Image 1 (tube, rainbow, N blue to C red):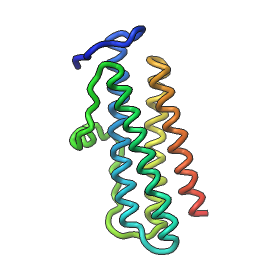
Image 2: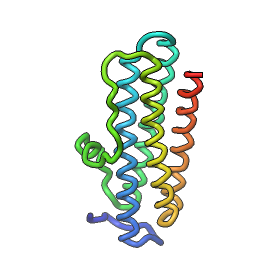
Image 3: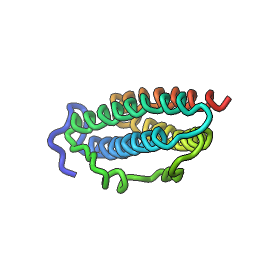
Length: 159
């Protein structure tokens, strides 16, 4: 990849590796926003309104995370790829298979499972970034905190 520039203190090869890790996180953050909207539109049954209204603000959270990740890629001299085909190309996580109208419980369980993998992927990225760039690592650490909080809400809703 051709970088526009490098940040002082980071080599070109380190920057390229950081950008690659962040691009993967950006793609999953965008994927998560779409999945959350899908769940928001299709959840049904007991506790509908509570779950429906709980999901929507999380869409904004992950879109803000995506924006922060994309801006960090740009700061590192890269070009963030926010196109749908980039999400598909970068997907190394399981697809969200729940479709159509389903119960609140089914969607909550599916979102918990999705967030398990999302959090693990972010934590793995943190471990790699810790060795390369503490600033980028800190960004993803903040994202994990938000993801874990939402997952806690989901789990608490199931009781």
